[in-house]
Length: 478
Image 1 (cartoon, rainbow, N blue to C red):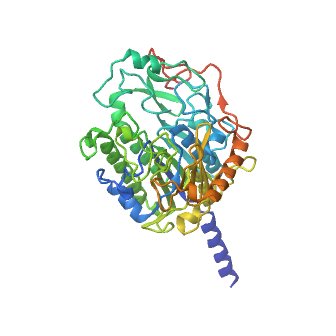
Image 2: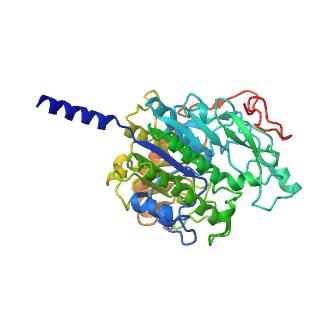
Image 3: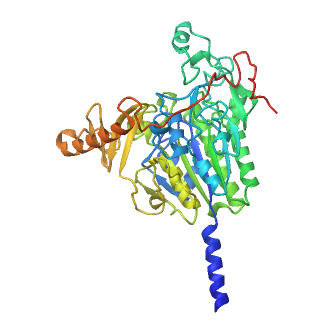
C-alpha cells in the first residue's frame, strides 16, 4: 500500500513539473480577414484552416496600431505606452529601445529552465544591449526592424522588380532630421540580417524573397534541436509587411496579388512548424499562438473586414488581430471566444503554464487568460486603446468609446463601428470617460506620464551597416 501511494505521489509530481513548449508566430501587418478562418475568400490558407479546426479562434485579441509598440507589449506583459514611450515605431540606428531592465517573456521562461530563441523581425532596438540576445533569448536570427527600412537601390522601398527612383519632393519629406528613434526615409542604411549579434548579410531583393523560407527552416531546425527540453520559440515573420516579397514558388498563386501570395507562403510556414511538432510527437505538449502585430495595411491589399479601419488607427481594424491558439488535448478544437485578450496577456499566460514567476516588482497590465483559452471565462472586461502617447479609446465589455469624437459603439452587435449610440447611453459614456481619466492620470494625457517606465538608451548609436555598405564595428561576422 505504501509503495502504491509512493508511486502515485511520484507520478503526480512528474506530471506537475513537466513543462509545455511554447511557439508564438507573429505575422507583420496581417489583416483580420486575410486568412481563411477569419473570412478570407482570396487567400488559400489550408494549414491555418486546420489549425483553427484543431484549436480556438480568439476573435477579440488586441495588439497595437503599429509594430514596435505591439512587440513591446508582447514581450513585457504591459500596455505599450508603459514600457516603450515613443511616438511611433523605432528606426535604424535608434538611440532608444526597449529598456534592458524590462523583464521579457523570454527571460521569465529562461529562468524556469526553457531554451529560448527568436527567429524573425525584432524591432525593439538595434544597438548592442537591446537585441534579442540581450533580452532573454539564447539565439537570434532575423532582421532587427521592418523590411522597408533599407535602401532604394536594394529594393527595400518597392515591390519586387520595381526599384524606385528618387523623387526629390518625396525625398525632401522623407529625409527628416534624425531624432532619438533613428534614421528615417531615404536616408536609411542597408538592411542587415543578424545571427545573434553579428551581421551575416546585406539583404537585397533576393534576400527579401527568401526570408520566409529561411525563417521557417531555422524554426524547424530549432524545434528539432530542443525537442528533448522545454523551449520557447518566438517566430515574428517579416511577411506580410510592405515591400511584398513572397518566395518565387508562391508568386502568382493567390487571387489577391503579392500580399495574397505572401500570406499563402506564411500559411505554408505555419504548416511546416505544426507538421514538425506532430512528427516529433510534441503536438500534445506544445502551445502555439498565431497572431498579427497590428491590423492590415489596406493600401497594400490587406482585408480587415468586417472591422472598420486599418493599420495605424484605433478603430478595430487597426488593432484587433486574427489570432488562433492551438494545443491538441488542452485547447478545445473547433471553438472560438470573444473574450478580450491581447499581446500583453502572453507573458502571464505562458508563465502560468510553465510554472514560472512573473515580475513582482513592477506593474503588469496583462493577465493570465488561460481560462478563456479552454472555456467560457472572460478574465478581462476592460481594454485601453493607445496610439503613441494618446489614449484614443476605452472598451468595457461590449462598449467602446472613442474619446476625441465621443462616439460610442456596442461591439457585440456592431463590430464594424457603424452606429453611434452615445446619445442614448450617457451613463456608459460617463463611466468610460472616468476610466480614461484614471489611466491618463497614471500614464499621461497626450504625454508620457509618471507610470511610463524609462526607455533603454545608448550613446552615439550607429547603423549596423553604414550607407557606405561597411559593417560597423561590433557587428562583424566572428
